[in-house]
Amino acid sequence: MPTDNNSKSLGLLALAGLQPYQEKPDEEYMNEAQRAHFHKLLSVWRDQLREEVDRTVHHMQDEAANFPDPVDRAAQEEEFSLELRTRDRERKLIKKIEKTLKRIEDDDFGFCDACGIEIGVKRLEARPTADLCIDCKTMAEIKEKQLLG
Image (cartoon, rainbow, N blue to C red):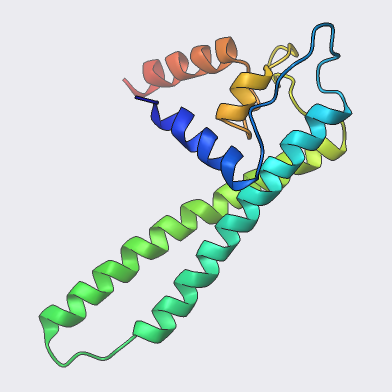
């Protein structure tokens, strides 16, 4: 059974009409083909999230009712609250995706912000907005756990 990250990644790839990127022997890392692959993947993901935000707005406008029953009104408010929280997280993700697309355009994509090494195609397909290699991300998580107790 695939992990959540793998199924999400494969879902994103399928949504974008892409197959997992097959690196060729001696292929230069983050060449034009790889950048185009990730640009398309991120663009489709961003567009899908934007559509979800639009659907939520329309749903809330269509479903907004002033129920006389306090229980019905409370249930609707709770539903809207959950949807808004989800959309807020997606809005933040859209900003992160746009930042990553800018990094692709600036030819600064695919390398760890902390140590500068290659993040790797497989990791980027699993988490296209990753800006740390797996080792630096692991260390950052350990430090965060230590600080938070």
